[in-house]
Length: 300
Ligand SMILES: Cc1cc2nc3c(=O)[nH]c(=O)nc-3n(C[C@H](O)[C@H](O)[C@H](O)COP(=O)(O)OP(=O)(O)OC[C@H]3O[C@@H](n4cnc5c(N)ncnc54)[C@H](O)[C@@H]3O)c2cc1C
View 1 (cartoon, helix red, strand yellow):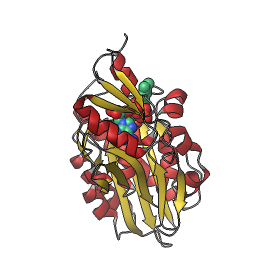
View 2 (cartoon, rainbow, N blue to C red; view 1 turned 90 degrees about the vertical axis):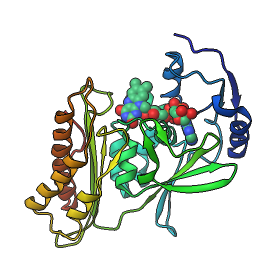
View 3 (cartoon, helix red, strand yellow; view 1 turned 120 degrees about the vertical axis):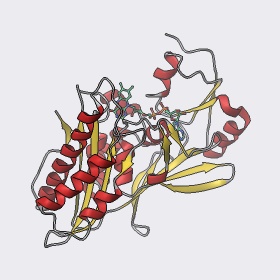
């Protein structure tokens, strides 16, 4: 199907995009990689009166470490493929590279951007749980200036975020984990390239004795938004990661999950998947901390 008619404007800067958003009103949509917006427009599920193409705005595609701030700074237009292959991401935040590698197919990863994916706020999207587990933040720019929102409070509902109509995401900021940290992203999918049945992101900061100093735990496709499981984080924090502690944290994960039944499975099934993926993700993270090479990402 062809999209309904719309005006198309190329923004050449962040300020230009904000100005266009303000002047275009509610019917305007930003276009980054087009991997969510264009299919929705073709199905006429979304019918913007104006499409504002920000795909060529310079200064939004960076991926780099800001040593002074202890952050990885990721431009909103960084593609999934860029994050999958970036040496600094692979070295410092393997969890992000692992998640990027399981998004859609090669075309989706080549065009789709992290900013577009977070703004889309698909309940089964992969970036939401990852940035939540890593205590990431989302920088949003608008006519009133820039603000930085914790990933944990960025998502309001399915396909709905705190972004105002005249704001865009400009950067994602992720604290670089301490030495001794290890993580895993695990995603169950029905077939290659599909959205998750459920997914779990786990990042553990461990001391030499194997005690967990800090834990980040978040779920995807387990509710209307990504879910940061604070109770599981608290259960693991300050503890040796023994089986009974992992069992208790897994109970918190299953309790926090409130997945909707759909073609990918019943609510009970998905809740059980969340618990099982969590236990496996903790195991993968611990083995990686011991120096083993362990495969994460897809679970089939
Ligand atoms: C076949 C297929 C399989 C997929 N599989 C997965 C998957 O397994 N996991 C997954 O997570 N995703 C998946 N996706 C979605 C994919 O990750 C998209 O790339 C992503 O959701 C949107 O990124 P985009 O850059 O393409 O955004 P666009 O499609 O350009 O935009 C998406 C939405 O975000 C808004 N937007 C875009 N950029 C910004 C910005 N900087 N600030 C504010 N608003 C903005 C747009 O107005 C639009 O509403 C899949 C998509 C397809 C087509």
